[in-house]
Amino acid sequence: MRLWGDYHTHTSYSHGRGTVADMVLAAKERGLKEVAITDHGPGHLFGVGIAHLGVVNRIKEEAKLWEDRTGIRVLVGLEANIIDLDGQLDVDDHTIARLDILLAGLHNWVWPRDWPSLWHFYGKIPLARRLRSLKVRQANTQALVKAVARHPVAFITHPGLHMEIDTHLLARECQKYGTALEINTSHNHTTVEYIKVAASTGVDFVISSDAHDPRRVGDFVKGVELAEGAGLRPERILNTRPSWEGKRP
Figure 1 (cartoon, helix red, strand yellow):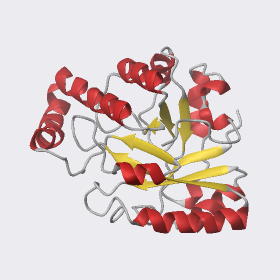
Figure 2 (cartoon, helix red, strand yellow; figure 1 turned 180 degrees about the vertical axis):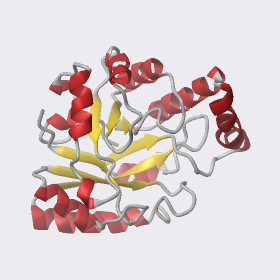
Figure 3 (cartoon, helix red, strand yellow; figure 1 turned 60 degrees about the horizontal axis):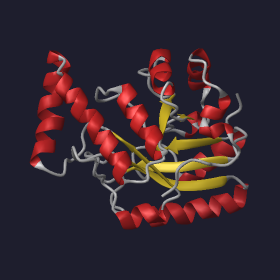
């Protein structure tokens, strides 16, 4: 299974440890044809996200420079944070329209948009980790589903990592809207069973490094092993194609 692009990487513009140049050069060294710079949206607390949406302009300038120098196609995107239970993101429509790719996910330590969401993320979810509340699981899933319905999300990042979800329901809705699910090689939460359940809906997948360091760009080994273990055919994985063919803003 040959993967041609890594579509989830972070630079020092958010909390990565490499520049745009570092990530592009690493992609070239590993024989990739494309790489996406997808720093965290500004809604992340404690300096995890970009400082403000204007940073996208700087990233686009650097991406174009290093694309010309290396011949690697560089997509500029964001890993947006879902900031309320209605699926709103910490990225506005004007910025989304200027991106090449939009990712979205549920994260800890994000500033919620309203009080009900604040109580859900910082009150109910910590309690649910002890009480195993199904209602919280459903609310998490619906927040993702609504984000996919509202916005041109290319793929959901690390589903189920920070907040428990209904895999089948999320995958079914993502398939309906043309949004893929990520098989993330930076974390250990993804299982063969999760992939099998999601794959039964017909949804597509993306295997990503979620690299926060240039040394991990293009590190797909664990994701390929999981995909093969689940019996996924290469055509179900979007980055088996030489150029990004998934959903665009």
